[in-house]
Length: 369
Image 1 (cartoon, rainbow, N blue to C red):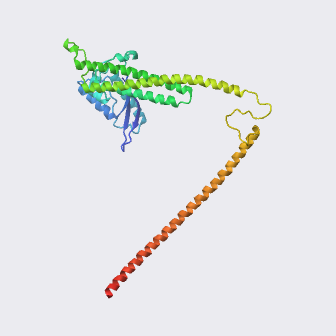
Image 2: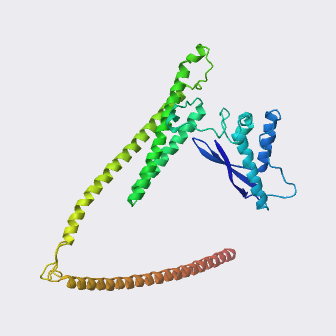
Image 3: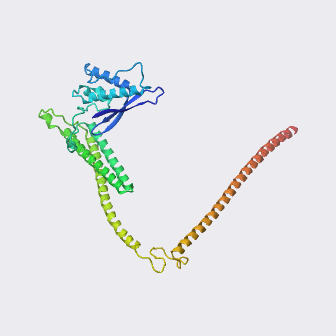
C-alpha cells in the first residue's frame, strides 16, 4: 500500500477550512479520502493511547495559532508536505505497531482484520498472484467487486473499439480489452481458490485436528457459498463472451481487409480505362438512362443537372411562399378567434346583467301582486 497527499483544497462550507486529499494505492484497488487537520490530530492522539504512549516515527506538523491555512497557500503546502511525511513514515516503518492499531485502519477505511506490511517491500509477481489465499470473506467480496469493474471496463473498451473509425484506435481498444481480460482471469482464479478454501473450512479443517496453528479461511454458510459460486459462474460466462467477442472481431477485421482489397483493384482498373474516342459518356453506373439524358454527353448532363437544381430552387421558393401565406392565415385566424372570444365575453356579461334586471323586475311584480 502506498499513501500520498497530492492536493489540498478549501471546503465549500460557509466557514471554509482546508481539506487534504489522501490517495491510497493498493494492489487491488485505489481510492481517495478527504481529511482535515483535526482528523490527523485525533489520529495521532488515538495512536499514542493505543500504542502505550510510543510516538510514531515522524511527528505530526504543529498547529499554528497565529496563522491559518485558509489564507496562506505557503502554510497549506508546508502542512501538506508534513502530513504526507507523517503518513509515509508510519506506512513504511519496519515496526508495524502503529499500522496495526485500530485507529490507523479506521482512519484509512481499511478492514479491521487487514494485515499491513511495510510499503517498501517488493510485491509478489503478478504471475503468482492467484496463489495468494483469500482467507477473509470481505476480501473475497472486494476482489469480486474489482472483477466486476474489470469486466465493465472491458465492455467499455469493446464498445469504443466497435465505434472506432481508424485502425489505430481499434488496435488500442483491443489492447485495453486484452489487458482487462487478463486481470479478470487472474481475479477469477483467486476467487475460485478462496471459495474452495471456504468450502473446505465448512466441511472441517484437518489442520485443527492435527494441532496445527496455520490460519484457515473463514467459515461461510451454505447459502452464502452457493451465492458466491453463482457470482463466480456469471463472471466466467461474461469473461468467455468477451474473449469470444475479441476473437471474432480479430477474424472479422482480417476478413474485411482481404475483401476490401479485391474491389479496390477492380475500381482501379475501371478508373484507368481510356475514355471513349467518340466523346460520348462511358455508361458505367447502374443508373438507367432517361429520354432527357440519352442524347447528352458529359457537359450536357452537367448542364441538365444545373437546370434541374435551378428548377428545384424555384419550387422550394414557391413552397416557402406558400408556407409563409399559410402562416399569415393562421395568425389572422388566431387574431379573429381572440376577437370573437372577447365579444363572447362581452355578450356573456350583458346576459348576466340583463338576467339580474329581470330578477329585480320579477321581485317588484311579486310585491305589487
